[in-house]
Amino acid sequence: MFTGIVEEMGTIRQIKKGRASAVLTIAAEKVLEDAKIGDSIAVNGICLTVTSLGGGTFTADVMHETLRRTAFSRLAPGVRVNLERAMAADGRFGGHIVAGHVDGVGIITELRRDDNAIWYTFRADSGVLRYIVEKGSITVDGISLTVANVGETTFSISAIPHTVAQTVLQDRKKGDPVNLETDIIGKYVEKLLYAGAPLPGEGAAGAAGPGAPEKKSSGGITREFLMKNGF
Image (tube, rainbow, N blue to C red):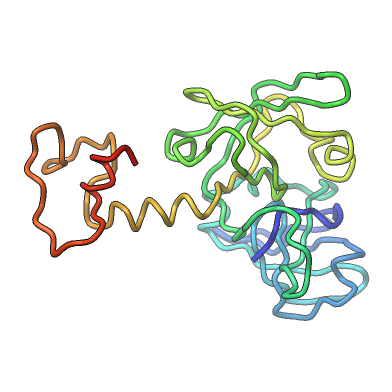
């Protein structure tokens, strides 16, 4: 588990590409201070396992599924990446719960200065946007950020100078892809609340709608009870 507080920026030294996979060699300093083979390090928000260490670098395998679902395919030697070690049990929880499992790729559609801050607007798929709420948390390339605005197809964050200076946000420009991970709590709540039932807006056969009979229950809180009472 991670918190989205980037510890340092590393640099891609080498990428060995397989048929549908890759091995990354990344130069770093701070995250290597106590690193061991088998440790987890988030690279641009993606949890990777250290497979070797040496010469101020570490290597990590990237499987096909990760390349397919993330912005990793755009990496190249010399590109900087955000790095964070897995959270220590006695560490401060400075960001939010980050699993290091990317939900999708967003595209930067606008950058705008607002006094000392910079607004970044991202376009994202509806499957990702459904879990993004105003004033909630979002992970962008491994950075824990607060959502400032949510639209029908986009969302925005406002970054302070320190965050921009300490992360790869300073390298990002309009049109660039970024890794997105939504707040894990929302996904679990939805899964438990709608277990075995169609999600709102899916329109699947058998979905409960106005006038639909309520399923019998042995008592306690049900999905129908919560919906009826405004939850």
